Length: 161
Image (cartoon, rainbow, N blue to C red; front, side, top):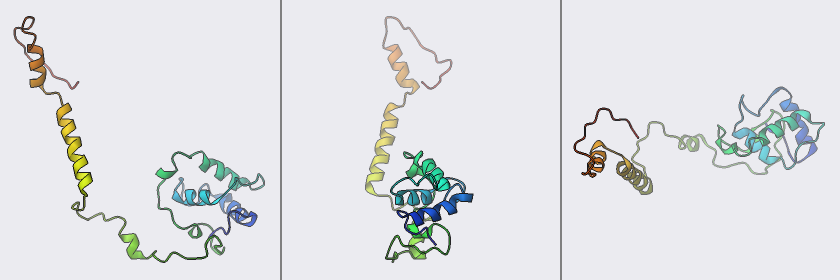
């Protein structure tokens, strides 16, 4: 699986054929797979490789949003059509076992692993919110401070300011 060397004409030709009936490398929306392949291409494909050039210009238009694409970036050799040798890397990643992938997201894990910095930041934000919050008592004190002009005060309705 793979496109081969995407810096060579043969690799770009394989990419062009792969994209002839697809809009993206994987799925129906731009993903980290598209970012990985895009980053491996050094220059835009030539005009005779119309599918690859269309895809390249489309992914390039997302320049500022590429980090927010869904998915996980895998090694370049894991993308592309089957049967094409991956010539982009000479070594295979040693630590891509199923156990390592399971450690990334623990949906049922506890929240006890919060670091001290996150707890401190959360407490600061809560304190700032509490200090900024306008209550009726504070507002009432400010209004009745004008003793020459205000005799008494009633709250008929109170909306957030």
